[in-house]
Length: 339
Image 1 (cartoon, rainbow, N blue to C red):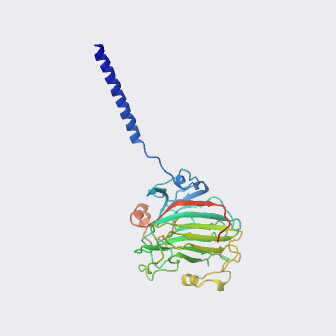
Image 2: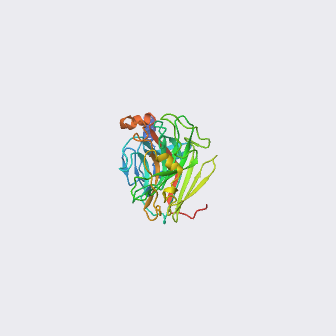
Image 3: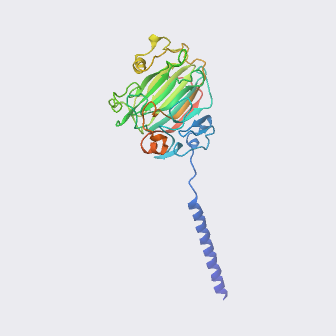
């Protein structure tokens, strides 16, 4: 009898251990994978606030994400911060273009300067729009924005790809700090790889030739914006492409008289309205800040892109959106330029 009792005790102890083991495994199997936030991938998020394409705003981006707009995607063992925004949504009061875009909390003047870098790939631009409109099929992936005066933009870095093309263009625009009122404002566009913004279609659905030296969707490139003592130094790099550098004085205008206005600008704007010169001191002494992310240029108003009555899910399902992935980025003080 004692032997039987001992055997039963051993059996019960074994079953208890087995059940405990099952319970532990069961709990472990239900544990959800921890959320990876954009601030885990690019840890400068404490320096920014954000506006999303559905109108959501946040000033606290550490451990912040929002599905379908601002989140982390992993591809081939690399984590990327995704910025996604429809052609039509809720945007800022001064723009008809939606954005999922960071806005720098710190503000500065050109004389003080600052530096922004980013390594990214554009995954999607709108497939709907009017090919005659320069901003169709494009997204801005980095900016300098003024916070006073006309609140114009001394820098916008664009990616644009026409439907049916494999390669798109990277270019940057300088918006003048208009002399007098801002009705005569304009952008001057400079190509990096591919075309500048003045190259458009002859009809709503006709496109120019595909750029030979363009950048494809999903192809990595990087930019550096270094404003040092009032001079903007730009560097663009991409594997398999020539690294290209530019400089632009933000303290003294190149366009302070009507005779200085470039032919590109006259061709693009004069059929619609008059254009004005820039004030002689350009953006000198005016407060600026950086922006980075996906600032979708394909709104339904000017580009006639399809917006499905503003239904974001339908826009995403039918190609009316912009999506940009960043794997690295920095923001901070300007540095002595090496160019």
